[in-house]
Amino acid sequence: MSIFTNRMEREGETVKAMIGLYCRDHHKLKVADCGSCSELQSYALDRLHHCPFHEGKTSCKNCPIHCYKPDIREKVRQVMRYSGPRMMLRHPVLTIFHLLDDRRKEPLSDYLKPKSVGETDEDCGGPMNEGKAS
Ligand code: SF4
Image 1 (cartoon, helix red, strand yellow):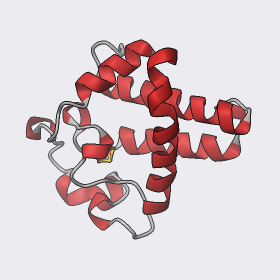
Image 2 (cartoon, rainbow, N blue to C red; image 1 turned 180 degrees about the horizontal axis):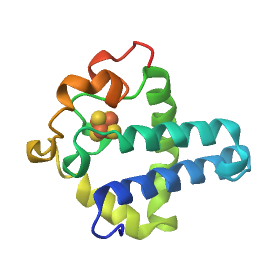
Image 3 (tube, rainbow, N blue to C red; image 1 turned 180 degrees about the vertical axis):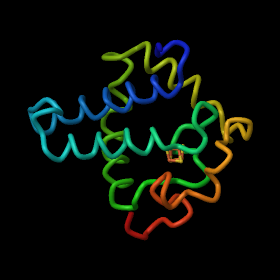
């Protein structure tokens, strides 16, 4: 698999790069050595792994359902606000792909997993149930 051909892989690498930038500048650590950023990264990668839209996904900010718990979503927003403007210098290839990927405003329904719509509580952390514990 490659970031050039696989969107899920690319999004995972982008998430890691953005959290890495944030952690380096705010906590002076690598993500692997930072409890809070490790936890955030694991959560984000887990959501991505269980994304019901899979390769047909939008960027998470354009997602119609949003599977993140509200408090974690806010943390991710903080990271994105900080790292977003810095990404082009540090990770130009990922940034260009992200800009291209971001042009998709709605998920591609062809990619919906057959059981995902009815199984969001278990499968994706409850995208239809934001605010409930997952
Ligand atoms: S369901 Fe939406 S918010 Fe969750 S990982 Fe997929 S695109 Fe992102």
